[in-house]
Amino acid sequence: MTQKRNSNFLQSSGIWEGVFANYVNRDGGIEQEGKIIVKVEVDTNGVITHENSFFRLDGTQSDYVGSLNVRVEGNNLINLLEIDEDPNTKNKIKNHRFEGYIVKNHIFIYETYEEIFPNGKKDFRRNSVHYFFIKENELIMLADVYLNDKLLVFANTKLEKKD
Image (cartoon, rainbow, N blue to C red):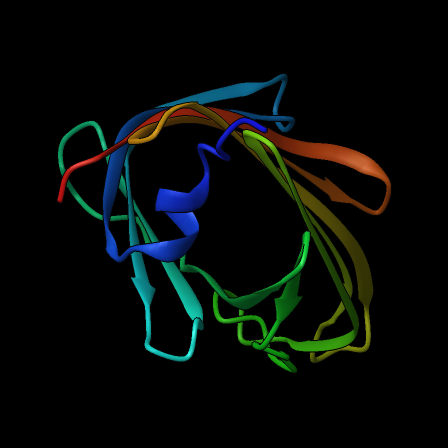
């Protein structure tokens, strides 16, 4: 049996960094580039916390907040961060659903929810993230975001563990 390369990402704390590229499906298509830093903390109970920070090419940090708080059960990631408010927009969240799967060299995360605006408008969001492990300390991350069943963003980065 071969070793799962993703064990370092799920079992040890550290900082992962890389250059990202996003395509935003607005205004004829917007391409974005910058740097992503993923801070991973694994506590003594096996709780894994990811905090994503994004930086523009000029080095300024974006306002976007990304986070994940999970634990591993077999080949599944179990969500421990039930949200009722979007940390980026401060709008209410309803019907949040999270699925996470682990296989050799690959992690897949799928999330859906409704975002409720103060005026009552509802948007349906669907996100997925793929982590594909190249080496113990190197991975490719692919992500997409759909808004009301229309592609909003797709993104990629190569992350390397820095410490």
